Length: 170
Image 1 (cartoon, helix red, strand yellow):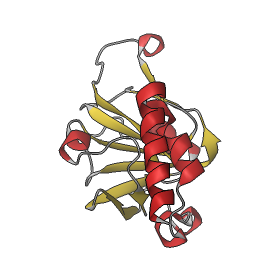
Image 2 (cartoon, helix red, strand yellow):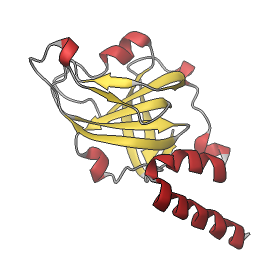
Image 3 (cartoon, one colour):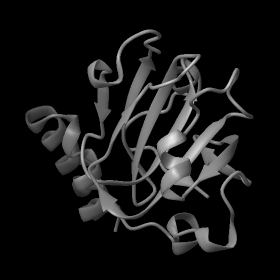
Image 4 (cartoon, one colour):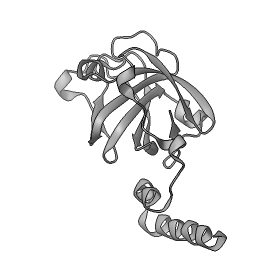
């Protein structure tokens, strides 16, 4: 069993060196299985928009405000004076390639892209663009299909050492 696990780690490492890190989640999904207690899907239906939930990444507990309905997802953290708690978590009904913008934002963010409870990527220090017309706002796209997005205060992802391949526990 130890040889098998070592072989998987070695294979993964070789793929990372030659193919790059964007394949981490795909490789991870293919070769590693975690106990369902760690990666089971949260029953989002028992929560309302604006409720909070606790999440864990790298042993760090985060208190996040929930956004799951279309209007709440579109509004996100726009027009707020400060980020509530540790940030906001967006839930999507299915895997999607999504884009976010900074319309009406008053502070910079880190955006954490999640697929099946595995961090797919992090876009750090996304700045607000006050005075920029809506049609000229930059958009920030997920590195692949995701079912969860987390917005944190800029710099928080680095502080928590959040990176591609980390596990989100809900």
